[in-house]
Image 1 (tube, rainbow, N blue to C red):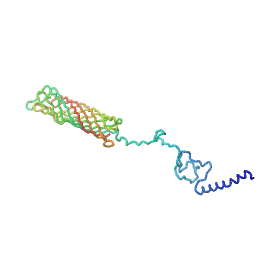
Image 2 (spheres, rainbow, N blue to C red):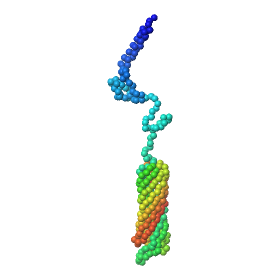
Image 3 (cartoon, rainbow, N blue to C red):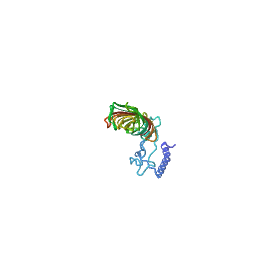
Image 4 (spheres, one colour):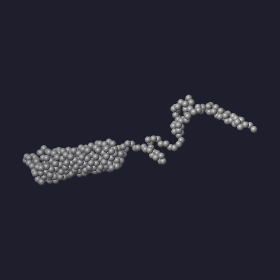
Length: 301
């Protein structure tokens, strides 16, 4: 019986021959030989690089076939992209264009409407001049009336936050013709020529839902009134004059988006002004003018 160490020697010969032939075949195919401890694989989770960090990792002149290797293991989210818990899928949020269909940023509003204008005029005493008779006066002139009116508004400003807008508004109100019935007991009706009001002041416009069309507004203004001449068939003419005063306006509107930033809709507005001034006959007039109107509004915001 042969000895055990001799048996292992005879059995190892074909194994060593097989390993030698395999190494030679790998060398001819271009595979790098094992370099011992210096041939360290990249750390787990790190990609292979076409330019190895450590020159001893790969032999001189060896470049891996692909610049990156596939990393197997649990799904990993990229940092700062999604903070969702790991037990549910992550999604990257794609926000819509900034400000699109949202009332924020720069604000421009153009509006106009038609309605009824109520007007009052008073002075004590009422001094007048009648051609051929000279100057005279009566105790007072105090009357009210009304007629067709139309108003406009231009406002420019910006949103303090989405849905809350502070702007500077320029308002006008025009009454082409109005009638006062017997403002002076001694005379008949007075027909006024065109009268106008212009005011400027701050405006606050509020959208309960910044992405929807409903909004309410309110503003104050310093106003100037241009009162037209008033003629009567029985009595003395009331001269045209100017007056200064104050006013306010309230509005409610609903608009529909017609663009990314533009909206168009319907509005209702109430304007009130009060002012005083003197005419060429030294009559000290006091006037008030109020007008509810309905119309259209165009807003960029």
